[in-house]
Length: 342
Ligand code: EPS
Image 1 (cartoon, rainbow, N blue to C red):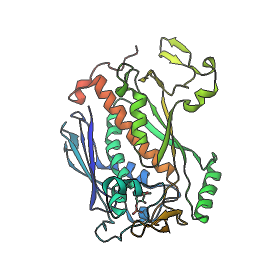
Image 2: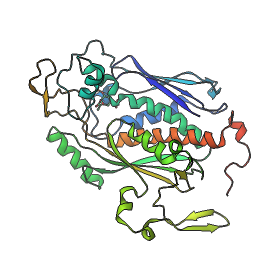
Image 3: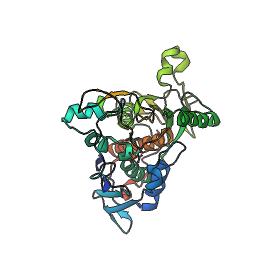
Image 4: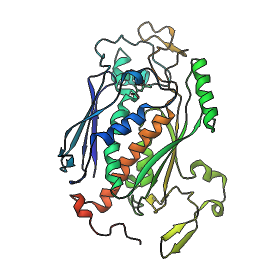
């Protein structure tokens, strides 16, 4: 129901996105999007690029007087650093980055031709689009949030900070785990009928599409493998006021690929950023001789930002599947009781 196309490179003039399928009559303002863009840029461990960029959106189309027209919404985020034509050639691919695999795929002779688009800078557009989806979801009291679960194996805030400091001192990088929760999601989004429309499959694909994400789990995830069925499935209850309900939520709000009315809980692992100030072994692609990997300006730890990006990616999927189930041309079309208790 929703379609999105993004364009832009890390140091091109701008990043752009076109979002199609948001119904007419939704109030959207740039401020709501800018708040989310700011959240993406924040966090201890971000690199110097974040001091240069103060991401702000320009909404180019799709609105009149701040209200959606149902036409495609085009957004633009300008890059302050738009030095793409002046940047030096990169000839020593970084292990872990798209550099070498991209080079082999396209036959480039400069890793920069890969890294400009492979850069996580593109996640600014993911967040811009996700912010609009969040505004739509908020109309139905659906809220998406995230938190950092661990950094480099540490689960306590103070120890996480120490771990990032350690990475800085070591000229290293560090990854971690974040969690995204979506509350107020009605039962019935997704499908057990169509494998490609399963809510968990769609969410996993969306989160895996974020640069640096190496694993995704829903609810108990890998924890299911360590328990008996009786210890992990969420018993079903009914109350007149609340309808069907659970006292536990190990399923993370998804059963059979469909939302079950409980909170959606998703966790993902972000690998350590692959640009290392103390670089690993690589090969110079011109001489084919051993060389240290190239060092580009980068971040030390971006797990918090990745959580914000994943919120946006999940908001897009929830909005898409919500429209698939309850679709209407205009917000006014939603009058009535689509979210009534089963
Ligand atoms: C990023 C912008 C990039 C990097 C980072 C994320 O800017 P620059 O390359 O100019 O420093 O800081 O991208 C990567 C970590 C990567 O591997 O590409 C951003 O806007 O989030």
